[in-house]
Length: 199
Image 1 (cartoon, one colour):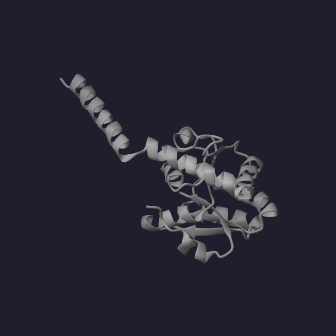
Image 2: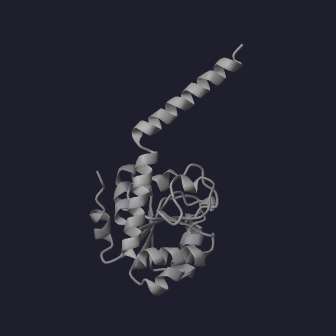
């Protein structure tokens, strides 16, 4: 079942939401997203960038948003896990500007919610994004990121079909049965390795 984004949209009436969710730490490079936001707002006046999460970088990022005169950015803070799906449902685009990322579960969540993704080229990003099909993997510059976010906001049909493509990919790639089978294989391999090294 899809989460309902209306409660979140109701908090920001008439705004088109671009979402970031994650820690506010240096490796997440949220300052890149803020600089891209400053460009996007010139051509998409009703856009709102929601920054969900907290971390050591929050103060610095809020200062940067102030310097950039960004009224179009809202720092939401930590959202309880059960409320996060509503944020994914409410957004039109999900953005991950990281310099480094482990397994990007947040991208899997965004794709599962049927949202197009704009992300930087971190190691595992293509686990959840098919570049040009379910989202865009962009150079880590404000201009490149802003251009693709703007494209998705300006072409809602393309954005929706990319979101649908990502959703199909995720349900195929991360279907519970498949994930369970992968886990089982991993456990079996681990057990075999342990058996091989035990005296």
